[in-house]
Image 1 (tube, rainbow, N blue to C red):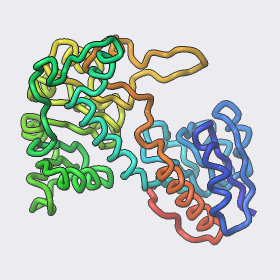
Image 2: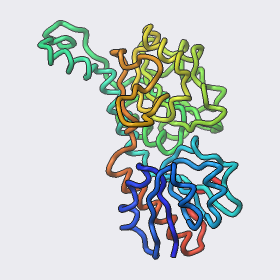
Image 3: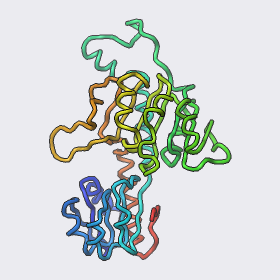
Image 4: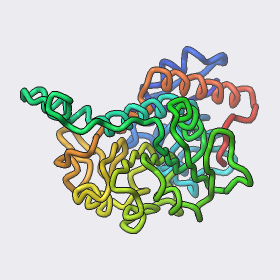
Length: 320
């Protein structure tokens, strides 16, 4: 029987869904990060966002480390035991793309600001108050940093909204993919920053992308542009982003990923800077992929990889 450990609250929340999709006999265990080392000695598969040296040393028969998302920034690859494989999941592209579209509309149309104003009896932002009309997405340029599954899904939706799409990916393509006005490599980053009305970060956090956007890069953006981060906070320099938003260097941002996360119960501000005091920032608690469709898709994918381990078949979406 295949033994599977789910480490942490978020992976653990998938266990029942995964169980429903399994076709082989498995024993599912739930543990937290603190107790994980002691729980992994006889485990074949571990479903986790975190993998440490201690976990690797304890996992004597481990065959697969299954990350229930796309990010690998908390996986110590040097700790992966010999004979073990590492895999991520996909299927979160639709949920995250919908979040981005909602964020673009909320930012550019001032939904949050108008809602707060109307709760105070003010009609600010509307024709009654003779306010300037709001911009439309049609005709605007969407800049994508990252052109994987999320980027491609966003490009499809943006095309339907009659937006122009410029994208950056790790390796430049000899010709632009269908539906893109431009697709370049890392050397073309400045072009996209200067062009984009909405800049979306949908790329992994690596040594190369950490701090990719700093003060110089943010200065290149239009003062009317919005930044939307659904990747990892550390891709953007924390201080530079705060100052750009506070000083009006860019129009605003939707931030779903953060520099500080809760470590215990009680209020936790997501940065050492006062982003929460800025009216041009839409803040959400890392929920862009927290949708019914994404969770169900992840559960099916994880179950398939567990079944493949049980049948001695190669898992899907291997990273290492």
